[in-house]
Image 1 (cartoon, rainbow, N blue to C red):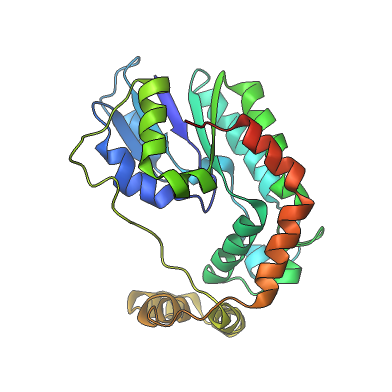
Image 2: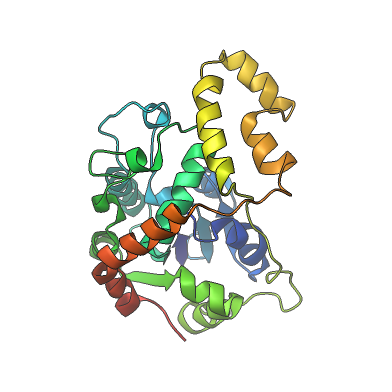
Amino acid sequence: MVLLHVGTHKTASTFLQYNYFPALKGIHYFHGETAVSELLKSNAIPGEDVLLSNEGFTGVAWNSLWKDGVSNDFHWIDSFEKRISNLHRLFPEASIMIFFRKHGDLLISMYKQYVQEGGILKFDEFYNETGVIRNQDLNYTDRINKLCSLFKNVYVFSYEDFKKQGIKLLDNFLEKEINWTREANSNAGEKFSNKSITGSKVEILRKTNKIYNKFPFSVRKALGYLKCSPRHILQNTLSFWQPKDPASFKKMNDQINTMLQDDWQYVERMKISY
């Protein structure tokens, strides 16, 4: 069988790709942007067990224009629709594995990622009905229904459940639903996470991006190679400094979760639980 882990963004995909999935027994496993091409080049035989993992399967949340603060018609939900449709054309009989994170928590995390990637918009410019992320882009019900209309088996997970239960949730799911197991002595439970910027570092980097993005590409490439880019300094060199997020983030988080609670209840009804 073919199992596609499609994300979504900011739901422990890196941990799964580097710690958990490699420990599964007897499968062909490929991850990242090259997952499909690597599968096509491999010696996997049709009918064998294959796992592909790439959060990009569920779309790209912004383009280079949005990072430069230029409004345009590129949006995450449209990218999702196109990529999922393409995925179905390639693997019409595949099963889908997808994680969802509470809307407010996801949005704050995505905004930090946006700034880390060079974004210059303020949060209230990033998230609004004419911004990078709109409520339409956060509609989980539509995403689940789209997947279910294309694929026979769609397995929905709550990121919050995964944080509480850890790999036991995945072990139970794979054993009961897919008949896959992992090596008992693997390091699949070890902590692995991407470093993120917090608090005032987000605003410092956002403002710095406005200047840094105007540097010639050759200069930015050289600074990146030397690990002297603003992002590297704030995210890695100063990783010991972890200022608390502003109260406005917590307030917005709670407001968004309340506003979209019906959508989250749909995830709760559809999710895998053991």
